[in-house]
Image 1 (tube, helix red, strand yellow):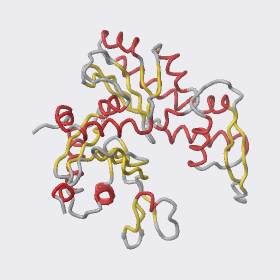
Image 2: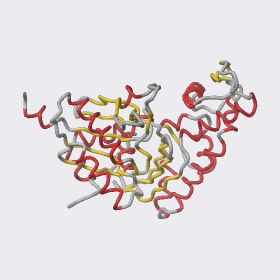
Image 3: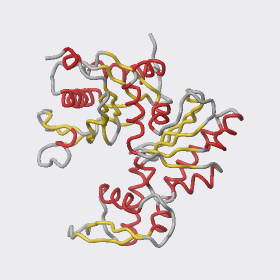
Image 4: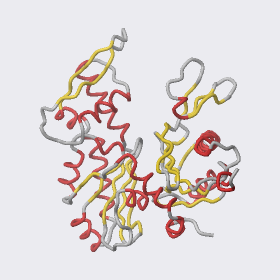
Length: 334
């Protein structure tokens, strides 16, 4: 067995509330699974992780151990992450060097907790890169340029906004309005107007099926629902305009957080953002009309990253491919 395999490949780990992605140096994304743990509530025994846990029922209980914003259930997250790392390496004793994203507005305690989590999951070295910088790298933005640009990452439970300039995070803000809140708005629309229940998966599928474009407003998407009393399955047709209006409240929270982030920037950086605009990423960025709302309220150009759901992972992956870059961006130094 080679020393390389024993010590472990250099990895980038994007540990998210909804899912975990792992990028292997020189290979790309090698794991993309839900951040889930299935265990027996009576015995505490863990029976499955990730994709294998998704869909299990019976006596098992599903837990999402990553709560977001640098907070997590220490034991479940450690065991899940260790399982994923071993799955990538196919060897129980591998101890890789790992790059992970650090929330831009995290506390010193949260930074140390994340670092400790990686070591407890058998990483031999850890580099923590600020989320905004990783997102900018993954979206293809050059970090070395002094001009400011805004990053808006809409994840499962949170939207993270950062303004990046000169390789630094100038200002950052987080709001509790993410993809699940947008999905909830679609579900409430169907329940209110049709008396039917829509699951999160069906709402997510409808959101993606409609796409991010705002017009034409009469575009339609089919939502799978069921009757609350009988469980009888039904299909409901919604228009782009209905979804646009239904998601206005969570979308407005994201817009206000973006405005607040700009308010915390120096005037010259605000002028840069007015020219270079904002980049949207994350699964929640696919909701109908969000780019339009941001353009109208911020008064800046808005574009979507080429691979919005994977941008942070790809940015961390660039650091795993170049550990000198990771070291220069490392947020905790001895």
